[in-house]
Image (cartoon, rainbow, N blue to C red):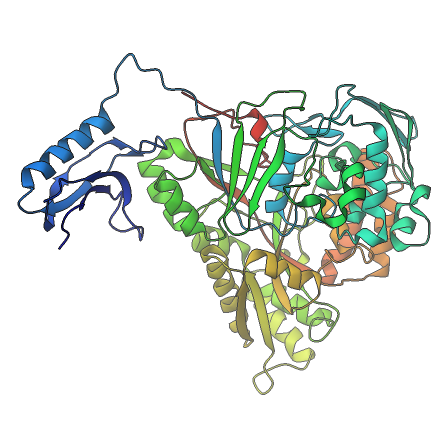
Length: 596
C-alpha cells in the first residue's frame, strides 16, 4: 500500500478487447499522507478525452480507476481537475502548430546508403533525405527534382538535364552535375556491390562497368557544365524519368565519402541534398531527421521520427495510444473496427505492386517445371484475398499488375481450366515427376513474420496439402527474409515488388542476368532473347507488345506464382495535412504539415 509521495493516475483504455496497456493521460502526486486501495469507481459512457501531447481522441467508454483511502476527497478533486484540464481549453488560446512528425515504418533499415538499399522501408526514409533528377509531388506524381528541365534526342538515346542553380548539400556545399556523374559511377562500380545496380543498366556501358569489364569512366554519363548533365543510353528506354525516382539515381556527397568512407552514413558525418538530413539513428528505436536549412523549399515539419515497427499490432496499438501521427499498415483483423470507430483516420488505396511466390529453380525439386506448375495450379488467389485476408488486396492472375497503364497483362495459362481440372492436372504432373502417396513431395514455404502473411501461408499450404504435399512453414522478419532470398537460401518463398507504372519493371525480375533480386535464379534463354528485343524498341506501344510476347512465353515456365496486388492500409491522423493517397504510396514529408 503506497505511503507518502503516492501517485494518482487517470488512465483510459479505448477497447477492452485490444491487448494494450492503458494510455496514461495524467499523473498527479497526492498529498504526503495519502494512502489508497485499488478500486474502480465506474465508467464514463461515450467519454471524449484528448491526449494532451498527441491530440488523439478517446471516444469509447472509458474505465477510470484511482487509489481509494483516507485521501478520498483529494483523489476526487484530482479527478475533477484532470478532466477539466483535459476537456476545457480557453477560447482565447491559439495552440501553435506542431512541427515534429512521428511516423511508423515497417521495420529497421539495414542501410541509408542510396546505392546499397534494398527494402521499401529504407526507400521511404531515403525519399525524405535525398532528391534525384526527378521526384514525387504531393500526389505521388512524377515532377522535376534536382533537374528543372530535360529533353531527349529523337532516337531516345541521349537525355540532357538542366539542373537547378540553387542546389546545395546539407552542409552548404554547392551541388553540381559532377556530383551526379560521381554517383552514377559509384552505383555501377562493382566495388559498391549494389544489388539494385541493374536499375541503371539503361545507361551506355552500365552492365559492362558493373561486371568489371570496363572502367567506371566508360559509363554513359557526363557533365559538360556545372548545371548540365548528359545521360547516354545503350538502347532506348522510355521509362527513364520514372526510373530516376529511385534512390539508385540519387546523388551522394563525394567530398564526404572520400573523407569518411563507408561511415559517411553515420549521423555525425551525414550530408544529403533533400528536404531533411539525418540527425540521429538509434537502432530499433528511431531514425530522426531534421529539416535541411539549405534545401530550396522550406518544410513545415522541422523534425521527423521514423519508428521501426515490424509488428503490425504494435504499430496499431501505438497509433491508438496517440504515440504516432501515421503508420504504414495495421492488422487486417482491425479493419472492420477502424471503419466503424475512426473512419476519418483510415486511408486505403491500391498500389502498383505484386505479391507472389517464387521458386528456387537452382536446385531440386523446383528445377523441374512440372513441380512448379503443379503447385501453381492448386493456388487460389481469390480465396486468399476475399476469404482469408479480407483486407482490400486485389487478386492477381498475372505477374504484371493490372494497374500498369497501357499494358494488357498475360494471365497464367491454367486459369482457362476449372479448379477441378487444375487439381487433376496437378496430381498428374506430380506423379510424372515421381511424387505420390509413397513418396510425397516435402517442401518449406518461407514468409515474412506477421499475421496476414501467416494466414496467407497457411492457406497456401492447405492448397498444396490437398495434393498430398507435405509443407513446413518458416517465418522471419522482413530484412532477414529478403537477405535469405537474395542469397538463394530457400525453396519457395513469399516475395513482393512495388514500384513503377511499366511492365518491364516487373518482367525484368525474371531475366537471367538481373542479379540477386531474381530470387529464384530463373534462367530461360528464349525469355532473355524476347526481353532483349523489347528493350531495343523506342516506341512505347511496340515495346509493350514485345514485352507481352515475352510474358506470354514465361508464364508457361512458372518461375513464380502471382498472388495479389497490395492495397495500402494506413492510419493517418486527421490533423496531418497534405497527405494524398496514390498508387505509389509515396508521401514525402516536405509536403506535410500538422494543423493547429
